[in-house]
Length: 186
Image 1 (cartoon, rainbow, N blue to C red):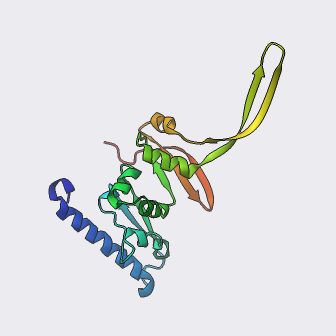
Image 2 (image 1 turned 60 degrees about the vertical axis):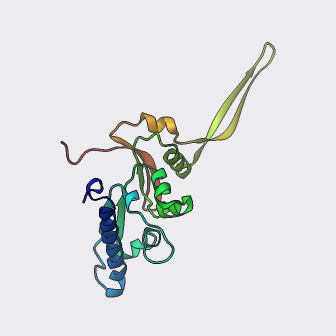
């Protein structure tokens, strides 16, 4: 049901299916079904159907407990800003995005997305060398400093087949630039 054809009707249908799926996965623990098999929820342009309310079932209160039902979410959107716009609240969007531990970011020029990724990856401790020189005096000073690990220039330099990855694997942080290989080629 393409949203370009079905509009609001398509969005309502997608949201109904998503919430029904959430309800079913939450009931797995009580019904003692599907205790061993992981289930994947995959959605492109997720900001179109994202919901975040504190009352009742929504993305805000499903994804923080989804691991107990062995549900893994794989979602994508054009930018972090699109989540802010869809939810109308930076705090709710950030709370929702925190539930997705693994993050891949393709080449972007969206400052909100770049800032989000920069803040998650953080700063690295580096040594800075300062050289002072005049006609009679010369000195070297080495000091500790912190610099951002990624920046807007890095995102602009990514090829279409690369992504910045923020991964947590077996309790270890694995942040890197990945080269993505297509599974299906045109």
